[in-house]
Amino acid sequence: MKTNLGIFTGLLLVSTAFVLSPRSWAATASASADANTPTARASASKAHKIDLNTASKAELEALPGVGVATANEIIAARPFQKVEDLKNVKGIGESKFEALRNQVTVSHKGASAQASADSSSKTTESSSGTRSTAAAAAKIDLNTAEAATLETLPGVGAATAQNIIAARPFKSVNDLKQVKGIGDARFEQIRPHVAVHSARSSTGSAPATTKGSSTEVTRDNTFNKAAPPALGKGAEQKATSNTAETKININTASKQELESLLGIGPVKAQAIIDARPYNSVEDVMKVKGIKEGTFNEIKDHIRVR
Image (tube, rainbow, N blue to C red; front, side, top):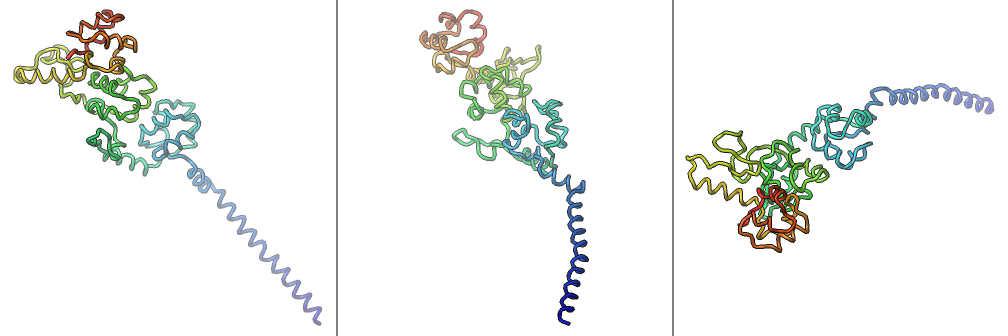
């Protein structure tokens, strides 16, 4: 009797296992199917994409074909409204875009945050000439920034800062490439940090006007004609003084400053120093190696007092 009862109990347990197992298999299969739905796959894929509006420079450089310069261009072009906007970034052609489009995404939340940060950022300068943390995110205006502010840009020293000031006003950031001492490589480093918001330079002189107007201003902001009568003689003298400050004094300039002049290398710079003092800018033509052609290129950028 006990033996029959044991056999019956064993058969009951086996039957229960057969009944429950299909349900367990169905639950497992259902969970697997849910994970493979288009919505689930899309969510998982999106989670691994890099957000063009919030990614760090290092994350962007991890993308195929994106180096340091292109990563900087992407950051400078923010915010992006859609992934296709990436095609407008310098260095991203059609083929590179096709290689990147499935690996990037655009977060509109990130775009809003970026736009808010750009609008609220202000450039502040401490007494030592260094920018504060709040100003680090703001771009420097090439037409109004002081020499100390320009020197905070990558690769820009005192001489190059003066060259930038002398080349004002700028109509676009690309005009910076024409400044002495700014090559293509340095321009790419500086470009994300600068902007052109105003046609008025920090020297206080008026913006350039068309030929024939009452007051003409050359590229280095030197007045070709006298100031309007209403300003008086004092105003004209002030404008001349402000312009002179942007020129290099060949009687006191360092060798490095002299080398920033067009066509002046280390040898000629030393020759200029050895031939001091000068009574007029024309006297520099007495220096060995400086002929009329070189003088014509530098005469508007030098002074003797």
